[in-house]
Length: 214
Image (cartoon, rainbow, N blue to C red):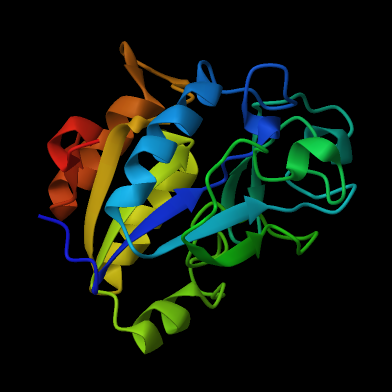
């Protein structure tokens, strides 16, 4: 049962840059839009996040001569996967998807705009300490449970879910309203497998939109 007063739908980086034809395409990523739009009327409240990188962001492989996209390097805040240039500020593909139902979205959090640090989570940059401000907004509004949808399951959605649990929220990930990258980790495991294991260990519920009546 959804509590319309204290539950909120979180839309994570639903941007064309992460969809087929985009700079960092997630397979079938555009399919989340229709699922989210079916879910949205079940909630009275929603927030959205938007990846918003300046040109030359240090998470871009192009900022590191000799490296290629999906290489991993060590940054002052830890390991960093290098990505193709994506979600560049002001570019059409960095906008929220034009067909996304934003009727219930009350705040949009932009992340990744500091050139020197990437930001997967909706709550913290990748140093896991620098806040985006979302936690304060949610607490002031009295929200206690967060339903997450968007892109990508194994990165921004998973990191957001982990941080939300750490901050004391109940968290539900709506699996068919998300899509993952699934980078290989070896031994037939991918980043999707690792993300599911981490989230299960934290008590994050993974459900389908059908369970919510969408």
